[in-house]
Image (cartoon, rainbow over all chains, first blue to last red; front, side, top):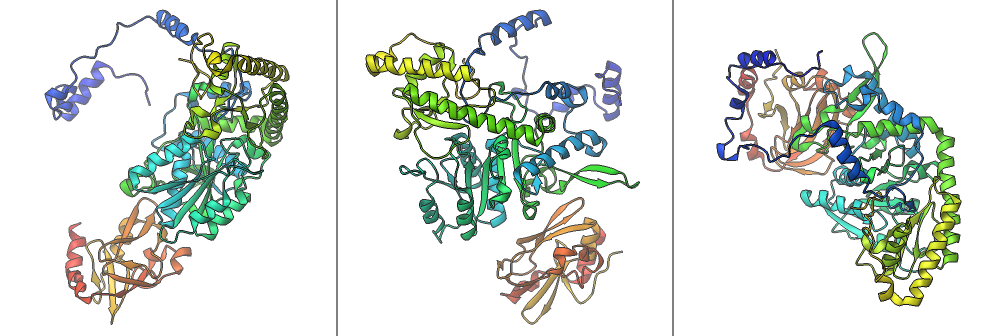
Length: 481
Length: 128
């Protein structure tokens, strides 16, 4: 098959075959008033000029910051082998194969990705992937509604606010209801899901619940009582959707072992760069019994007429292009390149390597907690965490901005994503990973200590009136403007 | 040529129905099974479910398509064929016998007049 662009002769041949004079004739049914008459584009630039302009634009990004930002996207070391293999032309520029069985290599990589995630999550079926953790979570919630034929889900406030927003967006179109489960306000388990409230919400006989969605670790970094949440959900006839962080699955109990029916999550931590917010990787997994409800593509393994191992796209009849409005989802694609990156990363570091990544992050996080507490910023909650937690900082927003000036990205001011919650008004969500260095933690502790002291002396107005900074910073990825 | 038993009634969507007093046994026709190809999965309504005439109540999945099962008559589902969970291919091999799908207790026998006789149904399949 030739992949060069069409020649004028090719075009003439095709036009003659279908009996029209020019390509414009194909657009004849669009009213003339709606047809574009030229686009207001700037003059073309040479490759050198364009490269230069883009480089100067990129240089405006702050890439020098010592980052303690997590909140759904995490800094991890990506071995060079991942990028080297991704750059292969067969992977990098290939589009979704429309006759998939011709692309056995592509299908095999997706099958390997599915298999690796099935091992990590402890569940039977993994889809070929979705756009990101938020849409995967929304698809998981929709699955619960389809499978139980109920119209209401309960979603914990410990689930990432952006994910809850995505679920609400998906549900709005389908006239489904998503009610939020509150977090405990005090006590040793403060900040985690209020199980008593959950039980009450499940007991409403007039509004049966299709699924309960909870995250572990939660958005606030806390470990949640997942087995108990699952038990309550099942007792009420609801399914249990668990939102997971894949690196944490190397050291925490996986969803398949604590009773989750469906698991969703963000795969960015697996060999995918922060890249200022994307492209990322939506993980969706489920138990075998739900295989016909799972959204997304599925690659299966079988044998061909000669008995050789072969890979196929399976359960295709369920997808939107065939099932139309009755399909389980509008999604009929996947994040193939990101899924491949995740598969290569997992294969390269192996299960022990992944455990080391998770464990080292936890060690650094404990050091970070000590350093910040000494600086005057104690933890907001007291429950166990893995590598992310919230700390109390007076005038958190202003302190965060001043620390940016000093080259430290001090996590996420929680007031930015939960402005209506007074308990989070003066809190920063910080995290550590295996890439966090002890001297970085010491620097953060010192700088934070100085800023807290400065705040005490100046008072809130004085602190806010400091030198203007480049910007407050965007929660995701560390980019400014 | 597809088999069209003369003692059954039919729907435009290729279901057959056998009525005994107020009980209707329902399945899909030989013609439908042939058009769908190898059937791999069947999703049936749960026993106790109230169904309306011509509403979609189940799903039949073949290798190449997923098709809805429509209730030929309204009433309550009183029985479903448990064999189909492990042997969906019965719809291809014995569509009018062991491949029966659901039994409905008919709520309004007047609805039966909306169904097609074997001759009309056969005409329908010939035109298709």
